[in-house]
Length: 130
Image 1 (cartoon, rainbow, N blue to C red):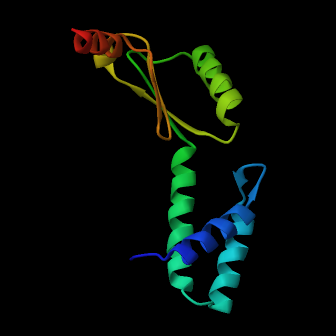
Image 2: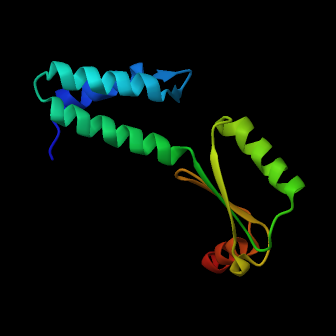
C-alpha cells in the first residue's frame, strides 16, 4: 500500500504522542488507534499501516541477540545486560545464543546495531584487508 506524505506525517505525529521519554507506551498506542478507528479521518487506513510499521520498527529496535562461542555464566550475562541497559535503556528483550563458529568473544546485535568482538569477526576483517 502506497502511503501519502500527509498520512505518513500524521502517523509519525500520532506515534510520537504514544511515547514518553523515548519509550513507547502500549496503553497510549491502543487509545490512539481506537480513536483513529472511531473518527475515521481521511486516509485513516494508510495512517494505521504507517503506525503499524513504526511500532514494528520500535519493537525490533529493542530486541537484543548475544552470541558467544561458549555458554555465558550468569555474572558475564549480568555485565552484558548492565552495559546494554546503560547505552540503550532498561527495557530490552535479550536472547542468548551459543555459536561455536565464533571461536571466542561476543557478537551483540541490538536492533540494527552490531558489535562484533568475536575472533571470527576479527579474522574476517583481517582477511578482507589483504
